[in-house]
Amino acid sequence: MATFFEHFSPQEIARISATGRRVKLPEGWSPIWADTPADKAYIILSGTASVRRDGAEIAQLGPGDIVGEAAIVGQKLRNATIVALTPLDTIHLTDETLRELDAEWPAFHDALVEVAQARLRDA
Image 1: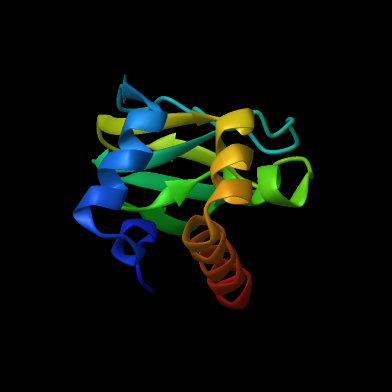
Image 2 (image 1 turned 90 degrees about the vertical axis):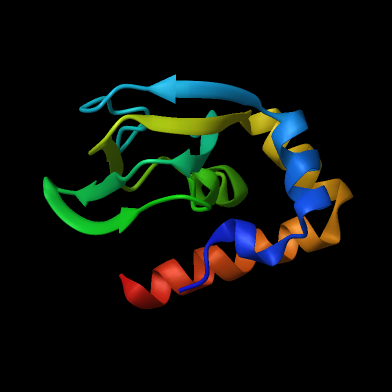
């Protein structure tokens, strides 16, 4: 499956990066918990994260992947917990920032939809 960033040119990636805030997360940290409100998303720049549902790992994500976006776009509670398997360097996007990018930038919206649909197929 293509990473989220593979949909964008270097200039577009720079635009997304400038919109968010760089955040480093330690190994073992869970920035997103299942059954909580969707208030943020992260794009992984380096490191590996585990996606867990009901305590079982269902996927691993790495550089260029986005996490937390589906619940924001779908306006639902989170359906998985994310755990950093290694230290993570990320771009933190608030729900408001993600919605603005989604509404103002058709290519960003299309990439979000494609990633979300691919995850649903793989689940």
